[in-house]
Amino acid sequence: MASNIVPGNIDGTFPVAGQDNSSQGFRDNFTATKNNFTTAQSEITALQSNKASLNASSDFADNIVSRMKMKDNSEVVYAHGSVNTGTVTIDHTNGQYQTITIGGAITFAFTNWAPTGNAGRVTLQAQINTGSALTLPTSVKVADNVTGGDGSSKTLTMTNTGLYVFEFISVDAGTTILMHQLGKQYT
Image (cartoon, rainbow, N blue to C red; front, side, top):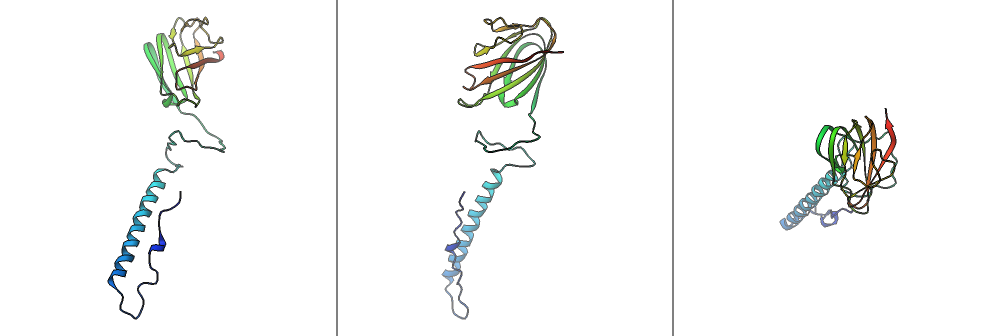
């Protein structure tokens, strides 16, 4: 960002020593100085508001960060807790790794995916009891490796109690969500 501060609008040769100087010259220099300080304040505030922080959260507002090396990073884990009935909403903005304990028949809903043309991904770690039924919206396309599915129904019936890990991916803001299972069943 180029600065809008204009140091050239201040007359550095004014006032001239040893002669009577016009008061208008003083007013012009003070006005130019004040305007430059106002511009500097605005630019500094913008820099402080739009910086990446080392000690606080930073919101990049869906802007691209490129040529980045990451080391020793982690993902936020969002815990849905224990749910036995009702609807569970998987909100992409809650984090890319979510956990849940399921003890009955629940329906999944999905919201706040990345904008179309960007890949949104949520990994769901689910502790599921035998007999639980998971109903998925029609937007979800279930891979053939998902436990409890039959390839055509949007309801998964779990035959074994265990820990399951599912991944959901969408590149069209949730219009189509691809689901597959990572591993089979963790004991």
